[in-house]
Picture 1 (tube, rainbow, N blue to C red):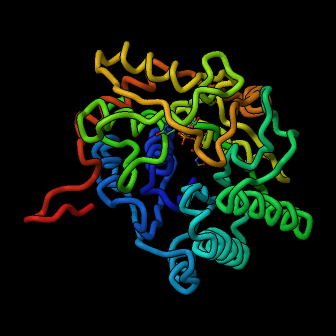
Picture 2: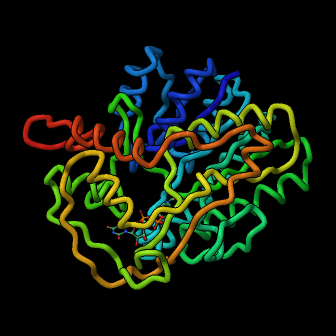
Length: 344
Ligand code: WQD
């Protein structure tokens, strides 16, 4: 089956391309490379030994996308392309609504025109109302930032689309906290500038790029006062997409699945596991809470286990080991030094 992967040069997109190729899918990638690097796709080719068909296309350019659908028969789509920084979305909501919503609307319009109606959509646990217990797919929804709002709005668009035309087969995957990297160390998380997220910040402290980790609050109602999250290996998340693509091939309607481990780890626990696994020392300082953070966020992943026959298999130790290997092999991520400037 030929699958179009939008945003396939990104962190989760590139790991999903590896798993798709390993599962003998034919992959076409489009990406505007705004917050990703073509080097990631070169690395996917190195890992899989297969050539990647790539087009640098921005989803906001409908004519470019139509050209591709005219030229290549696409059977299903995995839609990752979108901006994903919570803090950036608060600073620049219009950029997020334009890119994430308009990009998705153009994609759906072109898919509809060419009668391509199988879609897996990359959503996020950020759509859930913060809660102290395990979150299942029926939990209350409430976005607390523009990024999360774009995910919620797109989920509603997809439901309305199905109601208007029940020949669509759609699966919405809500990720908890993807971390780690492919075990080869060839692909991984390559944040632009100072990392927002916890583990890439930790690995940059460990490798000496950053001075110390700031822990945002230790006065939460949790075991050690620091935030608790459902960290899940990015390869497990990628493998969830293979199951979802197969699922929508033999089902119709809009299905929603949590991709999480069902287990929460605190910030301090992750730091301790990382130090234990890598023997690296992480200097840290507890500072004020980060605005918008919740105390606890972890999943009940049983629906995906039963209906997708998928479960997260990799341990928190493996997540730390694999993230560390990626950081050590790629101290500057995908940026390569050409003459005096770093380019990616
Ligand atoms: C995790 C914990 C922080 C950094 C975000 C998005 C979510 C998803 C994953 C896209 C929290 C603490 C963090 C640091 C810290 N992305 N922390 N010091 O906020 O749970 O989720 O990324 O879909 O949508 O919201 O992830 O890694 O930023 O934070 O103490 O330097 O680590 O307070 O408790 P988060 P995170």
